[in-house]
Length: 284
Image 1 (cartoon, rainbow, N blue to C red):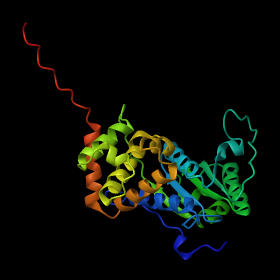
Image 2: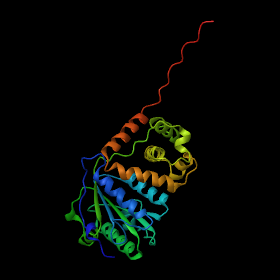
Image 3: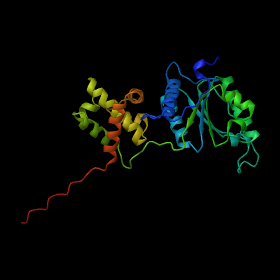
Image 4: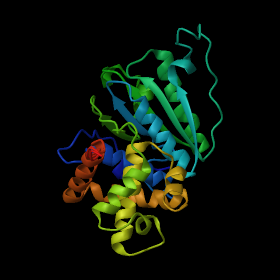
């Protein structure tokens, strides 16, 4: 598969916008791969390469969940150290590489500048994924520079979309006890409508906007699955929720006023509901 010119290696650091450039680029790449026509910047032979100084397992977990919930492919998680037999528990025994298919989305973790066997494992998984028509997300952590990377592996990394993840990556903040129903109530009140209107069948522009925003916040702040969120919105299916979430995420990166509105709503949701004290009972 020939690599489009736009996919040649480049590093993407944090921007000054409300949505970091690395996050917007990562979201675009994953959503493109999950699209029905698989149009995007990554694919067989064009890996997604994530470079980070610290562990990004939570981010990889989120990527895996998104792919699974999109129902566009199966996720396979692999670790280069286990494949190479370099973990203390392995005692030198290597974990076999499973078979891949064209619908496989492989998340492969490894250490930048790791030993020869681990770098060989990374390169081998890349080759097998490419041969099977699978897509590879290679996550490399550590501070080692490019000079310590084996040339065989470096040549493969250079074919992909390289994104640098900042050390302090803000994870989605989930407020303990925050429920989807509370988000729905706040968005209905914020937009001057009833809860029944927001979750009902209405298709007016105002209702669709409020509903999509509520779905986005529910997905971002509660960690609930797309199906579970859809159930709270009048029994809608996961694809409807995904469309609502995508409509918001695609706008956040280009509309700072809209992003500011979301920040204010998140701040409102982060406050615990106030409980007004009851007036003392009248003396009998």
